[in-house]
Length: 114
Length: 116
Image (cartoon, each protein chain N blue to C red):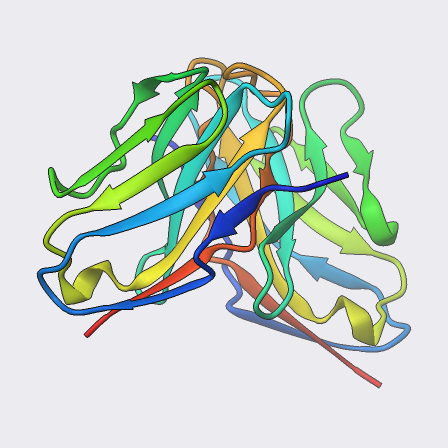
């Protein structure tokens, strides 16, 4: 069965510092990986995805993520955090025969302080 | 353009009553997904539609839950005889691909269901 782990419930970062939100996955087959962000009382917004090709993918709002097959990880990163980045971040995975059905991690609350 | 819309945004119902939750996907999106977000369980897949058919209903928690999609567009999630454990935010998403793994899903704002 597919699964996603986000080992940190909360990440605290000072504005201007780099941020990392961790994600590891377990799948049978090739993974297709996604990051979504959820602002308070809002639906999920797509940030970026890895399907194939370059291991480093860039997405919205200056975020990027690196696919590491050997470590089964897909960590989300940003070089310089903004207070407005504070939100709940979800990593998700699917595989080719699942119809696009996403399996989500438990989410990581990112707090960026001025 | 218009995104995914869901109605109602909030629903409070008494235990034992039936509820219907509606999702209007982005026009032209052939795949539609229902998820549930709750404090204890996180984000869980419920069911997905490819056109009007549902190839995967594996996430529906019990036979009290059902969903349909008509005209390849609007979908309704019905919960019969609601229980307190059904309280959650129900999220709908749509995507371009008919089950395509590479297509990102666009989510609606959700329906917050409270069963008293």
